[in-house]
Amino acid sequence: MIGQTVHTWGILGFVGERLRCYIELLKPRLSFLVAFSSVFGFVLGSTGAMSWTSLIMLGLGGFLVSGASVTINQILEKDLDALMSRTKNRPLPTHRITKLEAIWVVVVTLAVGLGLLLQFTNTLTVILSLVSVVLYSFVYTPLKRVGPIAVFVGAIPGALPPLLGWIAATGAISYQALVLFGIQFIWQFPHFWAIAWVSFDDYQKAGFKLLPSAGKQDFTTAIQIMIYTLFLLPMGLLPAKLGITGINSALVVTVCGVLFLGQTFLLMRDCLTQGAKAKKSALKIMFGSFVYLPVVQIAFILDKM
Figure 1 (cartoon, rainbow, N blue to C red):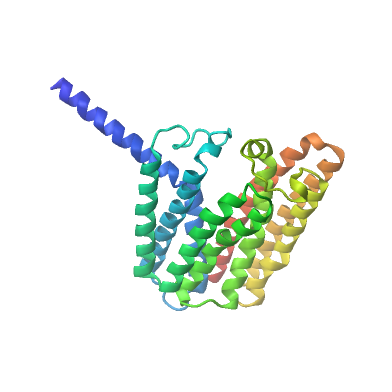
Figure 2: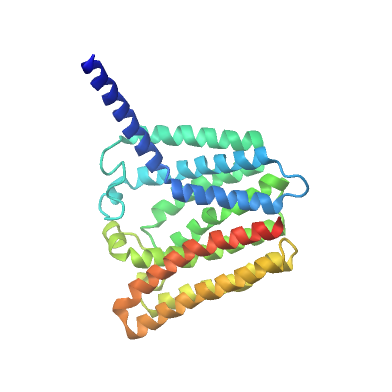
């Protein structure tokens, strides 16, 4: 009896560990943010009574498709992940799961995710979701070792979720949807570059070349981060100007944009006067980017509702 109990717990432990690895592959926090951005676009695009079923299925489908995409990324970069401190403990580099298992995770999550989107949204949403997976996994991923053009390419699938949400709600691409896409597209540059600055040594080990200015941590790169962050100020006001949202969210976006921009000036200052502190300033920009986007999107949603 005791032996059977131990055996049962052993099986349960094995299954539990496998499930934890599969969930880790999906990068739940990142995939949740992607799903939230899709829901954000859906809410802003909805007119009249909103379909809560479509909203929930859009979020779930977006989460699964995003999870499939980042899993493909980890499969392709398995050996490179093993070289970097920030990624060496992922399931594939540590051999906690096999490459074949990871491929099956991709097949299942992508099929279910696209199936949900097809059933509860529309064909255009599904097509663009698939385009996003291809761009991120098979174009952006190999370009990371080529040069900073990878950031431009990666910013496209990174900015698609709110556009997809709008299309899921309306069935069409409109100038309002492109504005939402544009905000998230511009946001990608200070976000990506701050991460690349903070993770510079790790990225060097893997041969990733994401920083502009010939891949250097210098004042020129800091200026480019500042310029793209500056663009967020007028871009963030367009939803209010076009009547998508109102003045309340415009005030929130302006305050967030000014605070975010201020962090880039600190980076520029540190590059000129205290080079050793520049990494800390870049880290603040990275965290600032994580805060900026959800706060702005929540403000837009609340203003719309």
